[in-house]
Length: 330
Image 1: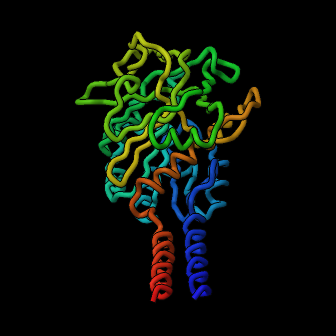
Image 2: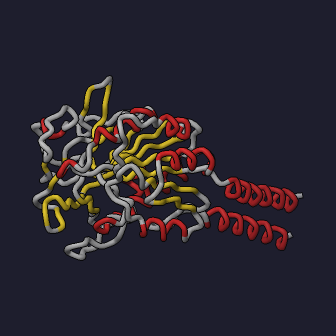
């Protein structure tokens, strides 16, 4: 009887080992078997995703990316490739572009949409050319049309912003559990606000339901209107309150999640998706931020991500224990 009971505990132990094997390790890619599409067409802010590609394909994920991809190619991929996550690194869509196929893809459920921005320096990035994607899928989050600079928390120059604050919520808490003295580079970023009934709102004062502010600038940061556009979308420039700008926020929408970041921090540009700052060489946590956000979506939001193997393994182990205990009592 002892042998049977011991076998039962052994089976449970094996079951728990199988279940835990798929849990994300601290500061590492914790998902596999997923398909990511990084759209590098339509004039993106940055195109180097070498670090992201290497890390995620090494974990048996598929990463679709090509600098020659057209909007038609994007539509075709979203229609036929069973894409789990679409990452947009500051793309500049035309007003005439029909992007409804992105909503069609998103509405299938269990989708991650990451919309990244850039600063308005030189007029190369215009938030109004990518914000329509967020509105299209029903997100309240928006990219500010200006820029964020930090004269204190920087990597050489003030536009090389080094974020030093994490927000509140499950994602930020997960990052906090992995880091000490958090920092992450956002090279020439803009900030994130939200829209309510067509009116821009400050994420620093109010956080809508299902929204998490994950990363913030330091209290020393300022907002700039570098292209002198002076539009209503230059929201934070008009605020009398400076500092603590939201640089990365998420919105959970049923089984979907939208991520909006002031920079394309999943790219290798200026070591954003990396571990050391470009100029100073100091260690940073940018890679951990990106990986944790993605892990959170697949492990806590997307309903299809719940591994049936984990559930079955633990269930079998528990049932085995109950059966053996009953037999022992008899």
